[in-house]
Length: 168
Ligand SMILES: Cc1cc2nc3c(=O)[nH]c(=O)nc-3n(C[C@H](O)[C@H](O)[C@H](O)COP(=O)(O)O)c2cc1C
Image (cartoon, rainbow, N blue to C red; front, top):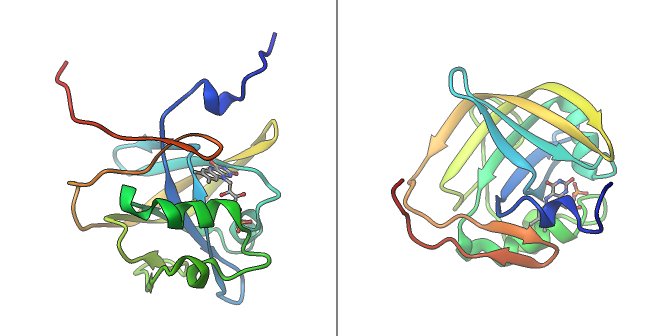
């Protein structure tokens, strides 16, 4: 029997990405996603799950392209804006003070200050319960540094800090 806790309170912490999309006219949007996972080494694939009521999902259906931008812990306030407001009613790039960088292979922009940016093409979209599983092939990767603290989500407004490393 399903318990009373959300799945996000059972599987955590999860790295947060700021995923950019755009509509047919090229208008970009950005939203926060923590139901995210790497899927394949070679070629590289990533997957995430999205509630189809998100404006971002409409964009994915229209253009089939997205960029996975991994923010740093210092970008938490921007992450919150991107995850609590919808692109339907607001320009979140402006609201959060995020700078767009032109992508190389896809139309949605990259986000300045995110040390990892993965340009992706949507290859799979299937409904599972109240979300859709989206799989994208990484067409181009940009890595500024890997020496940073990602934003890791627990649930709701609560995030968990990344500490040091331990060896197995
Ligand atoms: C930290 C964080 C993680 C989130 N993760 C997801 C997620 O994995 N899937 C999802 O559908 N929504 C997720 N959300 C909610 C969306 O980001 C939020 O509904 C956003 O307003 C959607 O924007 P849009 O309508 O412009 O697409 C998350 C929100 C936050 C704050």
